[in-house]
Amino acid sequence: MFQTTEHCHVVRNSEILSGEPIIKETRTSVRSIVEMWRLGVSPEEIPHRLPHLSLSQVFDALSYYLDHQAEINDYIERNRIPDELIDPRVQ
Image (cartoon, rainbow, N blue to C red; front, side):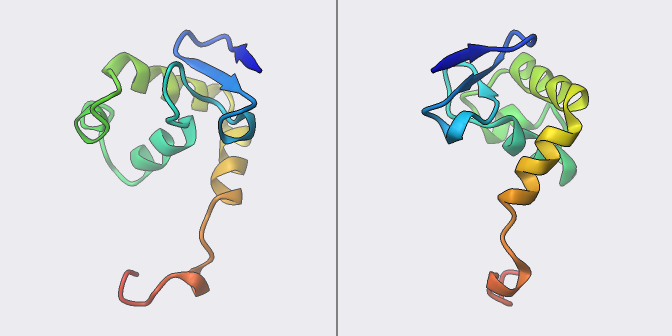
């Protein structure tokens, strides 16, 4: 089921990522954009790494995050790979 949000580029679809907030007409989660940003990737650089996104979509995702930090932080934590499952060569 498709559900709009108060942000023009962010929607929910119960059939995509169990209803986690995504960018409209993509399968890209707000969480994935926030995680890149937290790693130090500037908003302007994110569309170069995810070329299907526009800069306005990236900024709207970050705005959504700032309005819903607890929710997105919960998605980030739930999707985190435990350290013991990460190959030491990657860490």
